Image (cartoon, rainbow, N blue to C red):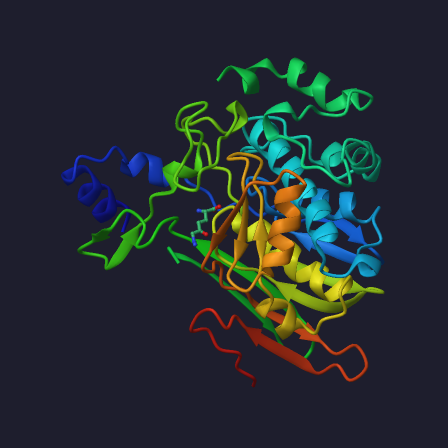
Length: 346
Ligand code: DON
């Protein structure tokens, strides 16, 4: 297969060789873990930014009584500010851990979230261009200085969640990046090639296909893996399986999973309601809030008054999730109403 694949790619002018493929290894990595209001969050570690960003977002939000605010403009504003800060950190600090030191532990530290909260104005949007990492939390600033090397430099993603009758859970997200990847099928082998190179920082300061401005830790290099936003997530309550979550959606994957989790934990929705609810997204740059169809116009007006640049869109992502009824153990499959997925039982 490697020989056929390399020959096919080279015929098309591509660079991949049999030697590259023989050096490729699948890596098993420790999941990142955090907590949110008594739930344990287990999610994807670098080179995905998903789990780290999700836990950073949740840590920031844990300091606010979101249940009291309900799904209001005020709660949305605080959530957007958490999204903005986590994506700011993602852009500067995250990449392939085999090549740069990635400061996951300080990023998912609750103390760090507390520092970030102090920079959040409850009534006004923080302009992304003025965002600065909390000065009193110097560890991450020092990190950037100590690692100069890291400073120099459906559209086809699928998520599925599985829980077997014994309660074993799997959250899988797999990606070709854009729709049909590179649009090239390896003829003798019958599969598509991805276009994942765009998940790297192709050029500092230049947005990728998802509008992300990324940092040097995610620069292209030989043997390197690109930074991802995939966020396959398993949530436990009192040590027992509670939720299995995930979605496609590029950078919106992270905020889709956060939206769903908060809708369940903070706003008391069942998982299907949480999956159906209109989503909102912020990724630091561009400094815009994206809201899905169905978001209340009053809420949009209030966000605008706080200084957010709101862009209304149709819909995005495709969350395919499972909740476990903690009393009966029943597995409750939920499929995203926006697409053609399906919950199946066995
Ligand atoms: O790994 C990533 O972050 C991207 N390749 C995901 C792309 C994606 O989800 C596109 N689907 N809508």
